[in-house]
Image (tube, rainbow, N blue to C red):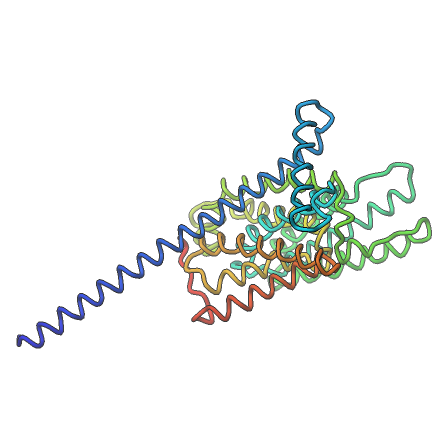
Length: 361
């Protein structure tokens, strides 16, 4: 080999080594930023859950004092920011609900999107709407007042189980049972609402489009409990859910109880949908299951990174949406979804690929 050839080979090897080292460094920095972001989101969620807990138990002396200090901090924040938001408990419980939605909706949505089940969120939202209608009618025709969210949760879970049952018992294409449940549940809800208007005035618009004012103390408390449950369940079953997401047939061959994990995933989706319906409304709730995940998929290199980025994007969408909503006196649900779509468009612009090639790590 000549000296020129040897030098050329050495230069190529050196360049390749440098490029590999730079790529490794970039990946390391990126992971540090992502993990720091997830830590901040976890800290924010902890603060919000702490507020919900303190507000619930504020009648006890020690916790009552802590609650008063919390609200005092809110007044200082209002004074510094020139706002009139953080001194009001109902705004804190609305923001707390939104922050938790920004975590659990993209978390569950990551599995749904990669299983091509994005439509299931919309279906269960319509099923939850039927549950709200049932609660309205029951309260209007009896002397028993029941929680509309609890009614929506029960009907939503039953609807999720029905979708799973139909998918396993019919030979139709995969989207057919979902489409039948979507249209059927909304039709039932519409009929119940129309019938119930004869008994009492029913304002269903807030549940259709979302409204910060309908986030009750009980609703915020339910969202906190359900969010913790969803995060714990995903953490405990992450490997199994990942397995069935990318190769369900192999999971069956490996004797994994695929039906049980499918049911778990769809029930968690129903839980997230019902909680999110308070802020986003029935019409927009599916967006938080899909849009942050779609944005993350454009720039992520693995499934785990997609999960992390979707949570971060979801949180940015919620916070940005709240800021835009409060500053412009616009509905929170629409503001959050528009912010999420803006993030998605930015992710497309920043991405160098049209389809993400993910690893399962």
